[in-house]
Image (cartoon, rainbow, N blue to C red):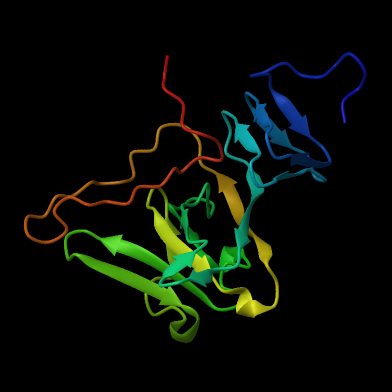
Length: 193
């Protein structure tokens, strides 16, 4: 909440002293963000945050129940993490609220070996235990038929600045150059002007 007449303009430095929520369809554009002792930021599904500072956030994504439509599965998602564990290039799966709830499947493609690595309910931690920045993943969740949708929440620090994390490979007669790359930011990727 801002004092009357003091709402910061786009790109301004912003102190966050209380709980702040960025709603669906809104882009919060800030310069430096300073988190006060009572400050927190939540990005609702479809909300975006552009800032010069990496700050702790919760980024929500609504997942609908995966259902069969004939021989096709509906409601599969491509995911990538807009956050990281402080000081790392990844987000531990255990820090993503509800990601492993219910019956789920998550796939990561390894181009040099032409293999889809699979992480799922019945094989917890068999495939991988973290989501790498800039890597795309395929995810589906049957929600055990109990609910139609749920929010997952990426809880960590925002990825900011230039990220040169992903190495694209092209292994002849293996993956033949197929790479699933994910957006590492809590906002759309914009063309530099």
